[in-house]
Length: 243
Image (cartoon, rainbow, N blue to C red; front, side, top):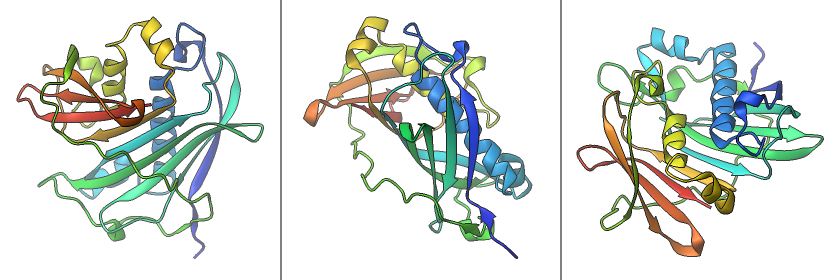
């Protein structure tokens, strides 16, 4: 039997609802498009959310890095492509890119695991991961940013109370909404000055409707801003390195 295709391409446009005050596709909108593309491709190859539910599993993303070359302008057309890499024992990698006329506009590298619904332990990829024709680009060889969980003495950025609109089908705060809440701690002028080109994220603990998370920041080497989101128990649930 022939192997499945490990990738899928989509023709896309930066719709007005996806863009910020500068008429550029926002960072959360880029990450939303990544999640949408990943979900559609996963369903087409038998590893989507519904497929895993039948096996008593659900997907989580543990690490995600977004690299931006330039953000598409409002109503600009481009191609989105997502592809999976060969899996490890209990984790797998999915990559994604926005391209136009041979130019890469943005790139995402992400690490996923499938947890068992009854005990939250990771499932074995060999039990369900597809036999694919892995012929797309190899993963980015730049390692994920290593960040410690100690934010003692870090500067407060703001608080965010998780609302019903933040919750996804897993019953917890959607990954992209951590980024929305984080960016909302800054003014438009501050974000423009920051001119974010890379966002390296780690998702550690799940948070739920009604909880309040606190964002704090600490300086790091090479001008990188490291941000943590702390839950009501003071535990780190999300971290990001902003470049």
